[in-house]
Amino acid sequence: MTAAFIPGGALQGRTLAVVEVKTTGAHPLRDAVWELAIIQVDAQGGVEARLHWLFEPPVALPSKLLALTGLHPLELRGLPGIDAAGEAIAAALKGRVLVGHNLRFSLAFLRRALADWKALRPVQLCTLRLARTALPDIADQGFDALCEHFGIVRFFRHRAVPDAEATLLLAQHLLARVPASALSSQLRSAARPPLLPSERFAGLPERPGVYYFLGDSGAHLYVGKSRNLRQRVTSHFQNDHRDRRSLHMVQQIRDVQVQPTAGELGALLLESAEIKRLQPLYNRRLRKQRELLTWALSEAGGEWRNELLPHRALLPGTRHVGLFRSRHHARQWLLEQARERRLCLRVLGLEEGDGACFAYQLGRCAGACCGMESRQAHDARLLQGAERLQTQAWPWRGPVALVERDARHDLVQWHVLDQWRYLGSVECLDQANALLAEGRGGFDRDTYHILLGHLRRHPHMEVALL
Image 1 (spheres, rainbow, N blue to C red):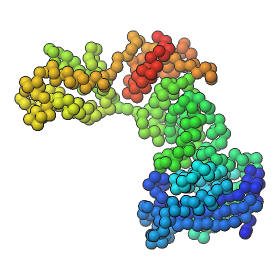
Image 2: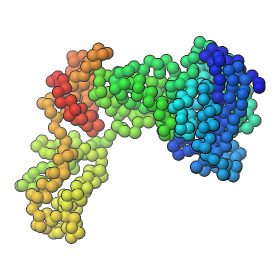
Image 3: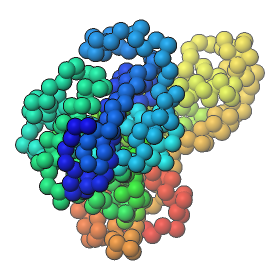
């Protein structure tokens, strides 16, 4: 056995398992492991064993990967999958500190392959994180760049065994440059992004609010909200192996910022507003919306007419139904109502012509177009279908501030609102007039539903009339 390095500080007396995983791609759900190497290191720093597995993956290896590795697909044909080696892999890792470069990527696949992963709960040492501490001035801390920096020669690149050997040498170089006092913060059992400083992670509060994931140069990656910021942020890092999007996002996180709120409503309103303002890369929902449309239903001469209008053009005394993001969605909703309730497309203005419509001949229209049904009966079914989506009237005469109190953290917030518009939150009611004067923000569909749902759940919420 040759000495890998002399362990000290937090590694004193610990055994290691240097892990290198090769996969068919970057998606933990769709891709699979085809090669795995584990180098076991004893407590004195000597190499105990070098373990190696090849697996036949359930998906084909990309041609580019075959070219990089020099592998031929026939080399894997007929071999068992990684599940068959699960017990042997778990035994090789049990009780050891896991060492790897960008270890989160490898573990995203291993956690799915090993049924008893939760029982292992291994302590982890990522050389990418270690390099950030040992070599803060080096811009490129990728595996190839670090190997070149330290003069580590691999006899074959992009294969598990030589890359595991290189990772062991890399760990030796980096550990020699990290003070023993700083090493304990590098060892972790809780998941944490490789580029996120430990002090930012440790300082997350257990209170309601909004959190921001930041990447290079302060770029906004993701904005979220929670009643417990620390718990929610941690859950992102524990479950990032479930899909490629989460895994990629976590790999880019360099900082986490938080904005505490007095409660759940403040967090919901701020999250929605911030996503629309910042347009974070990984937020799919609550993106900035186009102008909303609504069906305006008005009565004239005992008959109801429908007209599609911009939401900002609401007419007094008119029923407004639905908040649609496009004319297509608005038209589709009305077509669905016609199919479900045997309404006439011609009466609804969706079809032109005179006399009995084609849908009536097919039995899909009750006959309001040709006198076989009264207009009153037809309109009654239309109003019945519209009732569920009818836009609620603003329940106050003017602007208000909904009050939220967090007694535990001595925080009170007034959420300033007018006609379902969120104008902002203040910690002193005297500041509300400034928000009203700015009058920023138009009607927002997400804010409308947030407020409507909250008021239904909390009908006796404290309100200040402005």
